[in-house]
Image 1 (cartoon, rainbow, N blue to C red):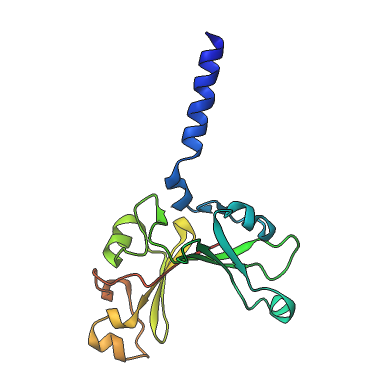
Image 2: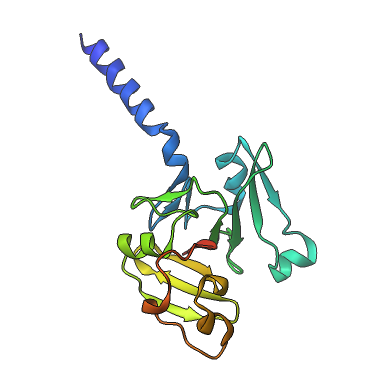
Length: 181
């Protein structure tokens, strides 16, 4: 009887830890299998069924200008990772999400709108750039970019105007989704 209970316990642990949805979960401390403590040399193991493209070699490694890109075997880009510039072992500093399957616990992903974002999280601050608006959500260490093309005409073309949270249309689409540790 004890063996049956032990076997059932092991099976349930295996099934819950292998949940395919976890592969695409985003929290304040993780993006899929990645955490802020993930070392660059672990990436090929973590993404063993995907392609890891590390362009950091030679001069580009010294300058740290190239990201590490993660692709599915079919060629779809999943993530772009920027390692920390200093320190050994190298860890991940920033993760850019390219695949809409990566979703926060509140359901936010690349297909979300500004309204979805404000309904799910408190906006910490916004910054107005030349071609976009960056929206920071400190609760999940994330920032989202909305293209200026999503804004009303007077805000879209006046580069000197600082765009406030209230001026961003609810239906504005997220262009970029990044996590920074």
